[in-house]
Length: 339
Ligand code: DAH
Image 1 (cartoon, rainbow, N blue to C red):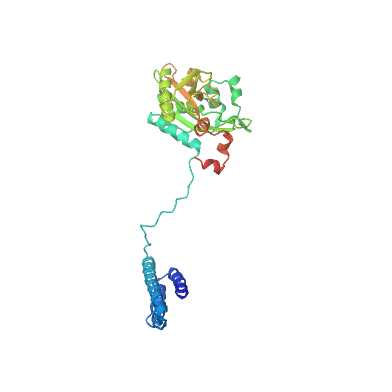
Image 2 (cartoon, rainbow, N blue to C red):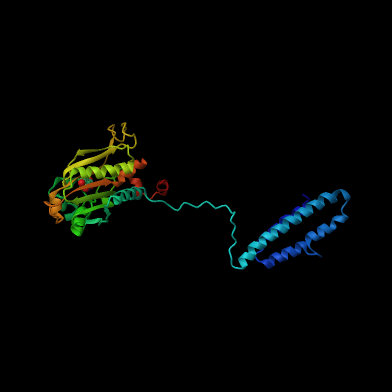
């Protein structure tokens, strides 16, 4: 393109874009196409003075430029004209800009919500309990008298000026609180934070999450416990997953079991994480001990029930292949962005 025309094109296109009102745009238009002194008018008029061989190409280029600038002025007029009337310019064909990521739910929250959905569908209500507990609900009412050795496994943080208060070591105290408040029959789950005085490493953390659940009604048996938890395991990990229950002692249930499901990392073939057993422990459970029902003011002759506790933090680690528990509360956004 002829350099004179190129200069005009560059300069005037900028002027058109800069025009913010219809009036400013009209001025640009006049300076370009005005009958007497318009820049392009003058250029076109000068054609006749050019030598024959230049006239054709220059003329063609000047006319193309005229069409181009006229079109840009019209487009700009539609935009600034619209703005002046108070309406936003609206271009249906404009491609959508990518929406920036706005954060995501913490992996423990995601697992918790999955379980909440599962249990709510079966009629369990979702409850919340205090993280600062007292000795009675955390231990005594759960059949751990003051000198019970099982207390040693759950050392926690005590409050200096109130020795009866402590940070709850599990969500089980809510069995007693909820039964005292609502009475039997009752089916509820309680997700929440728990605390223990641990020496921290990749597998131990002073703060972690559990999900407690229980059902109290007439004639509740071990078959009910198994049926409910098997349904949940299938919903959570798929129909192929098998569940097995093995005897384990917890003071607040009788009998008590450790609940295991097919290892999701090796699909039951045996690997390092499941210690070649093909199964992973994901919950503790059992039939609620009559002493616990009594502490909750429930007639243990009339009512019976089952209870279970899932390690939510542990479930999240297994599901997402997280190898260091300390990442959960690290506040590391690179870690969190992955979920
Ligand atoms: N509270 C137990 C813990 O923190 C977990 C548990 C085991 C809860 C058995 C239960 C249960 O409700 O029946 O290790």
